[in-house]
Image (tube, rainbow, N blue to C red; front, side, top):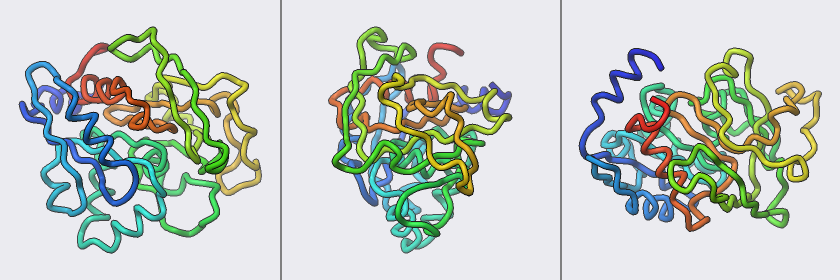
Length: 251
């Protein structure tokens, strides 16, 4: 942990205002999950974020599922919102959690491949050195659930988490420098991992060793390929708040 990040964690406000970007996707569910949490010594105020003024109130942010291109387009039409979001997500001191489309938005600016729509702008950064591939797990009809072991969770770590994949992205690769600072928290078993994307794409060949990684953290950033907000289980939201904001286990 850097000195700057340690100092930031030592000055966490008593009331945590956590925004959920509410331009598309299941933002209501994320807000409901956050409101269920009771971190010791803190209260949570979860708000929907649709404007720059609302984002300016936030200590942390969730980027929900949906369509990453549509989210970017709507944000670009809202005065001052897109550049503020990009700056917030890229700031290493800001806790940010991206699910599904949010994971795509947190890739390197030129680190997104796949999908039917091309040229719809760059990703916003957040996870340094991460490249992702849209929809590698298939379309809507290929949606699936899997009971995944996530031993890093603070509550009931031995109980599988019901992960829900809907038009999910996959981790394409991590840059060599990013590997040292990125922790893979959960991966699917080989039978659930799709075939790698084309090696001759602008992103280059995928890293097949980490293709099945579906939950990663780097600093105060967290991403998942799946939709925890649809699972009925708030343990991943709890993990993000306790570890990335409050410096829980491991620090």
